[in-house]
Length: 307
Image 1: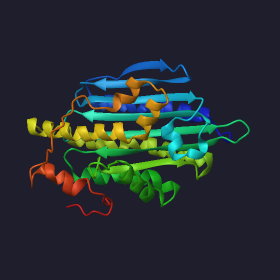
Image 2: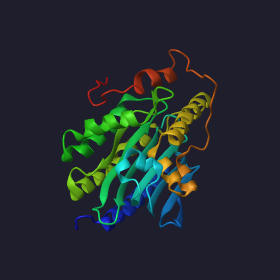
Image 3: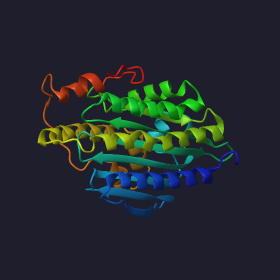
Image 4: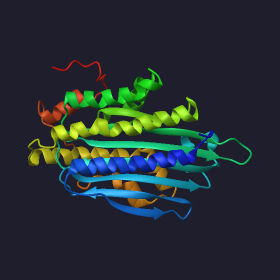
């Protein structure tokens, strides 16, 4: 492998998209992903894959993109101002799965590679990504499994990575204007190049490969749980929080929109049906209230005792 083998990264990402789609399609058992390949006028393109109204998934998408641009958009240069004015190349796989059943959590995952270039200067590159879980009805065993897989993916690369990127995930997927977490977290990392190219790339692969191992058993465990209108109403309310985060805070969404990305692919992450109610609050002592008291606050899921 050369010092900066972008072709190897792209090959991995395309294969990851294929593998994830195959497994999620198998889990769904009814619907298939449709593919929409596209080209970007400024450079690059991608493959958008969407599944809808399936046996398990109401809507979901697994996207690959590889785009280039003459200058960094504000969302990128704001947190790396020293790179303002550089051209960029970005590639990644991003996915969101919204289930029918409110007892099956929504999941999100993303792995990406970014290069910022300037004539006469060495390129600045990094990897980023992670995965996070957004349950509507919380189960300790699901949260522990999700975080256990995340910790195992990080372990070969350093004992500090899981607690570091778990904390970053808790802080990142947080709705400041609501003072509540989007879900129960997982991993989030960005600007990651500290292990050198080969090992940083290997770490990104480990995170990307861990998503299916983290999510599939939860889907299988919960997809047959009976539910009614009450659970669907709560799911739609919580989906509203998901929309708020993606449109206000999410770096990937903002980067895509500000860089002239493909709007349909970027907004694929939004759920199909959402409710907002004025000053809605869960009934005290209800199972819905338990999500707020027992699951959304930041906690160490690996140390939590489970009966």
